[in-house]
Image (cartoon, rainbow, N blue to C red; front, side, top):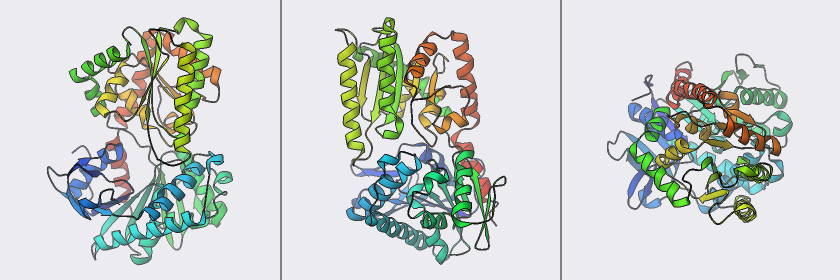
Length: 468
């Protein structure tokens, strides 16, 4: 396997999402960087992955991977009421907009917090049950499980526990909006190791701890002293499997897909822009469309020559995501109605999920990719894109408010709130000398190749080994 440093202890990973999903009577591997990175580690440690189950017919446990069973997937089944309150409610109608500083989207009810506490206890119970009397390292994943470590610690005080917070951590002036802020901090400080995407998020967390709890912290070394314990707080920027995207983009299959795609949408001979985003208001799709509308108005010579492909992946089936999806659809219709000709549309809108193989082909074929997030923990599309154009012909326009802008060189940074500045950036990227594009993109590719998803997990595993 690609991860070289493997733990001697058994590893228990806890996440909301399953690494293998039961569909059509069989187990299928979930798509995503976390599963890509952790699946080989779990196989090597013969660990246990605890997640919210989506298919009761699969039963509470499965041995995975199905082709070579080596670790256990333990499913926790939640009632619709608990799922609504814990996941749709507190996690995604409160914590998500709070941490992404989209404060007008926040909606909170007491029942959400009650469900969040209850479900975190359910996950903690599952950990204790699977652990038995043995030793292990428990690795919690993301904002859904902020309290879980506290509930585990109360029953197994000497257990090694860690949590990685995948989304941004806001500054204190934003975090203090949270009515349960002290309870969340206490829950997180029950872990021995806390991981964040960026140095700035790490510092935000430490300052929140200092301001809200008056605890002694060491900002430089990333230490918090609490209840006789020392908690380490580190930044670990997540990444992608560079080699997989590079190889997938280089195949004859990718070339054939791109040929068929261009023919289907009448894109032969066109300059191509690309956006790949979940239909989430934090991704700034509407701001991207504002930019495109101004771009075609200001630079009419690109009408009929440049087409923007927007792959929009539906996400949570609740408000405000459903209404946001409708706004995106209507915006596409408005721009296409204004500028389309009998042979050309400015935006080709694809609503749905494409395979990673197809995305790698599109990444390679795009003359530029645009990420216009208003706030983003990392944004792995940026890293997937730079791993894929093996002929070095593309350019990445990256929001300065995406975590990847702080972590990765080789992108053209844009401010999605500066509509005209973004429109001008598209023109500059399309007209830049090829040698300049190659040099810039190569810097990004070398960084992602060196700092890939396997290095990310290995760096965290090294920190696990330092927990006393």
